Length: 209
Length: 171
Image (tube, each protein chain N blue to C red):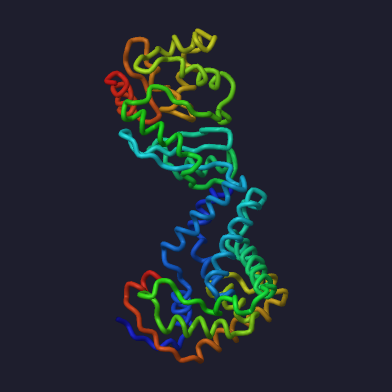
C-alpha cells in the first residue's frame, strides 16, 4: 500500500482521475447498450465481428444491404476496417447482432454441415468485369473446382483468364463467395489472398464432407 | 486520410468521456445517461466531421452539451425527493475509498464553472482556448477557473491510501 499526501497538482489529478474511474464491467455494459441503440436508430453503416475458423480468425463486415467484406488475419483486420471507413462510411461498430447470421453459417460451413451460404451480399467494393466474375463463382458446386479458363467462359469472356485471376484475388467476400474453388488448368492450386495453405484446407474440407 | 472507424473512437475516448461526465454531473446515473447521449450524438454527426478535426475536443464539446441537458432535466424533475444523491454510492464497494468520496464531494461543491474547467483541463486535456470557447469566456478566464478549482481541491489536504495495482490502472 502507498500512503501519500495529496498536496501537489500531479498527485491531486491522479487521485481525482482514480476517483472518477468506472469499473470495466460498467463500461462494457454501457457500450453494449450504445451498440444496440445505434442499431435501432439506424446509425451503423458497417457492423463487424471476428469469427474464429480453422483457417484463422476471419473479420466479417456487413452493410445495411448485406455482407460486404470477409478478411483474413494476414490482411490486418484493423487496416481493413480503416479502409472500409474511407470506402463506405466511418460509422463502423463492432456489433454482433447484424453479423449473427454470417457467423452461424460460417460455423456450419467449417463443421462440414453447410454447402451453400444463404446471405444477402453487398458487392459495392467491386465493379465491372471483376463483379461479373464474382457473381458467377457460387455456380461452382461445393466440393468441385473450376479452372480460371472455365470461369472466364462462365463470365462471358473466355480469353480473360488473367482478369479472372485478378478478380478472384480481389474478392471482397472470400470463403462465402468461393474463389477458393478456382484453380489452374494444370490442376495446381493457384494463388489465394488468404494463403495457399488456407485454399488447400478449404478444398480438403469440401472434398471430405 | 479518412476518419477512423467509430468503434476505435469509443475505444480511445470512452473512459475519458465517462470521467468527464462523472466529474461534471456528480450522480453516476446521470453521468451514464450523458455518456450514452454523447456517443449517440457523436455517431450521428460523425460522417460530417472533418478528418483533421481534434476528435477529443469535439467529443468533450458534445459531452458538455449533453451534461447540460442532464442538469436541465434534473432541474425539471417533479419530485425533489427523487433526485439521486449528489454523489451516488458506487456499486463496487470493495474498490471504494474514502478519499474518492471526499474528492468527488469537494468537486461537486465547486462552482459550476470551476468544476467544468477542472474537468476539461485535467481530465480531458483540452487547451484553455478550447475551454474558453466551451464555457463562453476568455482563455485567461478559463485558465483562472481551472487554477481556482485545483487550488480549492488541493487545500483539502487529503491522504491517499491505495494499492499499487489500483494506482497503476488509474494512471
